[in-house]
Length: 72
Image (cartoon, rainbow, N blue to C red):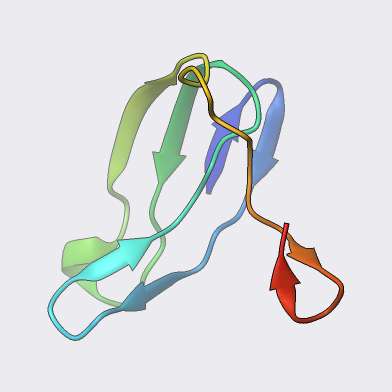
């Protein structure tokens, strides 16, 4: 569970064949925190804080689907 900007958002994780990963892109600048939930003891209850800064110059924002078969 990620928390920041007055909101809480869930993001599912996955195993990529070598490591466990979570992909999350904050939509608000500032401090964010997360806490993991897992049925694997070594992955459950991990917490961390990070700062989401301003987008870098030329950053066009998040990728989205356009016209069903293309990215926009």
